Each structure stands twice: as C-alpha cells, then as structure tokens.
Amino acid sequence: MSSNAPGYILSITRLRLRRWWLLPMFFHSAAAINRQIVQTPGFHSGYLALGPKLTFWTVSVWHGNQPMRAFRNSGAHAHAMRKLPQWCDEAAIATLAVPVAGKPAANTLGALLTQHGRVLRVIHPSDAHLQGLLWPDMRAPRIGQQLAARS
Image 1: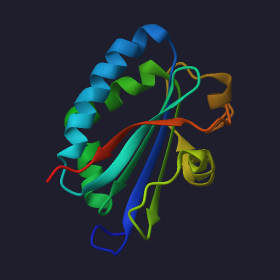
Image 2: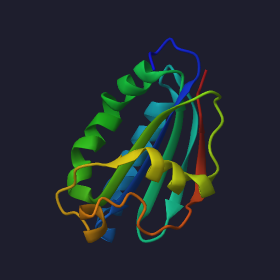
Image 3: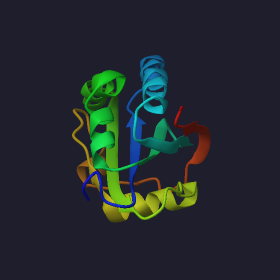
C-alpha cells in the first residue's frame, strides 16, 4: 500500500522483557516513544496494552506507510529498537492495511498478530520464540494507555 492510497496502516507489536530489572529502562524508552508518536505527522491513534509475565503490546494506526516508517526509523523509537534484541526474549510485529482508522479490540490482537505477523530478532530468545510462536501465552492483553495524535 502506498502512502497516498486510501485506508490506513495498523501496526501491532508484542514484546516480552526477559528480566524484570529491565523495566526501568524499558519504561523510560516507552515514555519517550509515547511523546514522539503523538506528535508525529500521520499518526492517527493507538494504545498500549499489558499481557502476562512482562509482556507489552502496542497498537498504532497510521495514515499510510510513509509516516509509520518515518516514525519507526527516527528519534526515541529508533533508539529503543536498537536495544530491543538485548532486552526482549520474545518480539513480534504485524503491519497490515485496514480500510478504516478503528483500533482493534484487545481480544483480537493475538489473532491479528498470528495471521499477519512475524518474529523479530532477539539475542536471548525464549523456546517459544525459537519455535516462531508469535503469541505463545494465548492470553489477550489488557488495554492500558490510549494514544491520540496531537494537532
């Protein structure tokens, strides 16, 4: 889908931290990313969700691929992505074109990730990650913080 095609881009990530002591660094990065995303042109809306055992989900809706890629490759997000392989033992992403800007319900995230996703490289993968499982706990996350674009 080109950046000027009708519709939206939905991005879903699932990350599991490998150790609890990584939480302060992860939350520091997440706060910086949240400040960045809401100010990024082309971001529509999203939310953060919590799963079991240090698992974190992100959902973001974009006005096309180009704004999403610009966000992904810059600022706090790009900095955190370089740390993700060390911090996480499971990481997966799904990116898909959707016709409307609605955010999917938390109980549909696992199915969307499984159908459209792929694992990301991590240095210390869990057994589930090595098997290519994108959603090994099969538990829907709980929605936490809502995100909306700032005008």
